Amino acid sequence: MKTTQQCEDAASTLGRSIRLLTNRPNSIKMNFVALTFQGKLERRRRRAAKPYAEGINSCTPATPTDGTGKIEIIHPPDDPTENIEVHYHGGALIPHVSLQLIFWGNAWTQPSTTPTSGQVIAAVQSILAGPYMSRLLQYGIGTGNLRGAITVLSDAPNPFSKDDWHNLIWDLIDQGTFPEPDEPDGRNLYMIIPPPGVGFTDSGTCGAHGFPGDYDFPADYDVAWGGFVLNDGNLDTITTSLSHELVEACTDPEDDGWTIKGRSSPSSEICDVCEQTTGRVNGVMVQGYWSVHHNACIIPLAPPQNRWQISCINKTPRSDRFHSIKEVGGIDANGSPFRFPRDAVIGMIKQGHSFFVVGPDGSTSEVGVFIHFPPGHEVEGLEFIATSPDQSRQDNLLSLPECA
Image (cartoon, rainbow, N blue to C red; front, side, top):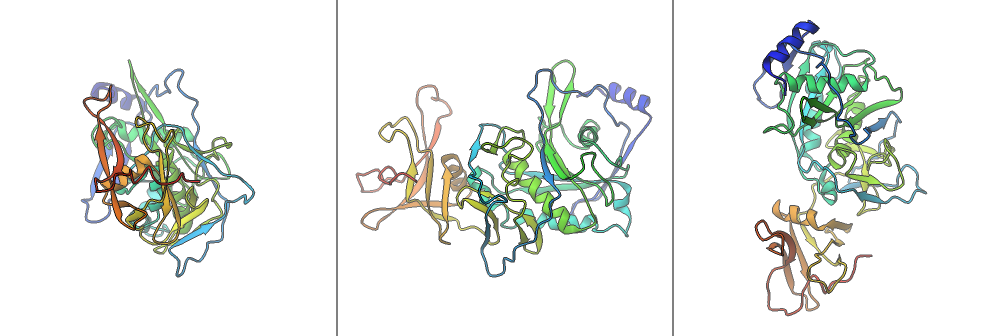
């Protein structure tokens, strides 16, 4: 991070300022912040860094599906002939998102602006608090929260570019409005929303997410998670695009998380195959995302169950005690198939979900999280799942068939 003197010198050189109005929901105190630094000098990507690619949300309109009386909307992908396989590349995820909204432009303070920032905030709170993201557990993503919202009173360029929204986030971080990503409370997802009539330089784009980087001499390089959605004056448009970017940012924040096999960025993420799947969750318009469990696009409409019967597993090789179970599967209480990776099951158990196995005699064995200490992990140990000790001599999980 730059020193105070460096920031003051840069501010003097640029001679501009950003004024902020903090507008946080739910009785969070209203704050006014004045910034004296904008357009950080010499911001650049780390040399030899991975090529940068952003997830893009196109402006394709979709007719919403009526979910009345349903617990979830299930819909085929945009191309019904496409064989969709989702792969995890071992990179970053956002298991519990801390979402920060940034309303960009003085127009947000005008009563005539529709929708109002308050209406957007309420809709986003509903998305985060409701069942919409519940099926992301299969990707290791749990619940999230709305950290807050601010209004930047300086107007956005029209149209604004990728560099413009990147710099806005890092200008706010550099001025101390938000902490650095590697500082406490700094791992947030920043979502920018301009007022109606402000466009993006790439036509046909309604939103995007990415991980803009920031380099401070001599060796401090950080990335922030962020994105934007455009605003046509319609709340449904904003929430549809925002739900798209929210899901993809959580499952693939740095272009090395969950992606669709055979597709390339910017159309390789789990919402990109479901842009024609839209519907209302608690009255808020959202877009569907790909569910491996359903082999379809899905919009959850009801709270998920928290008790799951495991009826199959994936483990290779079966007889090797040093290789743990990779996945479990079964049919949930709603009659829908589920398939969870081991780490997702561990996380769900810690969140209060319960898993169980029914033996041939009808007896029930609960599944728990245990720790073992193999060579090389004598201190921290490794977590694994197994049925709790009972009177059966057979390993209840390992007796189950392979998931097809």
